[in-house]
Amino acid sequence: MNAAAKFFSLTDAATKAAVIGNIAANYGITSAEAYAEVTDADAEHLLDYVTGPMRLATSLLMKRHGI
Image 1 (cartoon, rainbow, N blue to C red):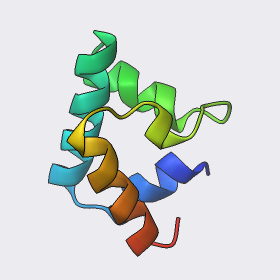
Image 2 (cartoon, rainbow, N blue to C red):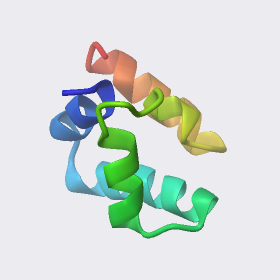
Image 3 (cartoon, rainbow, N blue to C red):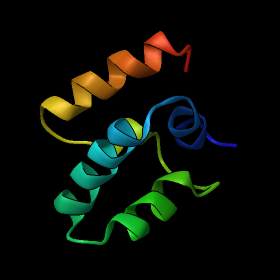
Image 4 (cartoon, rainbow, N blue to C red):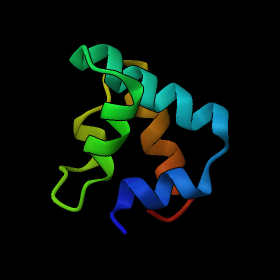
């Protein structure tokens, strides 16, 4: 399990939707495509995909969860 998949398993549905939505909007792809991309075994670090204020919030949540 990569760090993004672990992160999403530890967060609530609203947080997951917000982070995935941020990535999808940034890359012009669907939420399903964004989730598949960031949870792939060969994916970059989750924070490499997240933009704007959501990046800092995601970073803080990842630290809180020990990721």
